[in-house]
Length: 362
Image 1 (cartoon, rainbow, N blue to C red):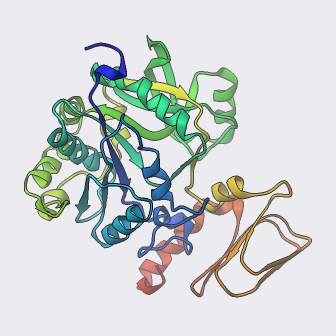
Image 2: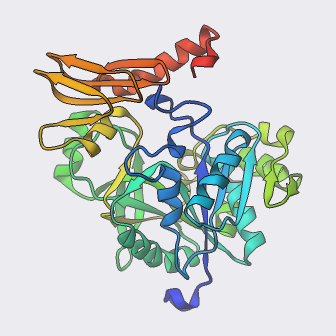
């Protein structure tokens, strides 16, 4: 096979829309998680994601989601005129590794020896043209049997992301992966930036479907086997593929990074600058939306002697006085006030509500 994209068949985009967005409660809730909300632009996160997969390079996108979100996804795709390849419904959450196996099997049903792109639905990318170019650059690498991930060039010592350290050159612009590193503490992240060769793990992957299945079978058979059975026994109707619940429940609950990428000798990384943002917390949302004064306001809001603030309300008037580094979120009668440096701990409140049986608030 030639190394030009023209000689490679179209890529099957698989959009993962299974996350609950619990660190963005109460803006993001079970019935309407963050990927189905317009958090950054007038389009929802999943609409932004799907819109990147336009042009001759891609098949129509396929969505993997919870059954309760299928109708909303179909409606939102219709709003932007986006054709849907299929919707694959998970009976329960099992992280991204089982979803990757299901995605690979489905990609092979679309096209022999398929390449598929595994992309979360909740990333904001300000340079979609650069994104499409880097995917095109990764296609020949993936076609040769490498499991490609895209490493984001870091612009600060972030502690909320995993890192990838590049190894030897594989081809122009692509490198073998030397190692994956868990989310580091700040001084370690600073050392990574000073040393160079480290990139944020974007969580976006480009795989040859056959290679992914083979490597998953080798390193995580308790993911590959049950996921394959769940797909093979799925019920299909009108473009909806409902995975078999009993088989899918047997899958190990693992991310694709830990299930295969950290073990395989075929991992490759392509460094890139996409204007990439993982909207995983209110701190991340504030950093993206704040103006020159550090303020990001939406709704009926008034401030006095307040700095570095994210304040959003869907109705009630909100006033904030004398605070710094704060977020105040009001959504359908639910109110959250937090120090932005504790943005990751919003999930603790969700856990408390679950333990108290107050699921109507989630």
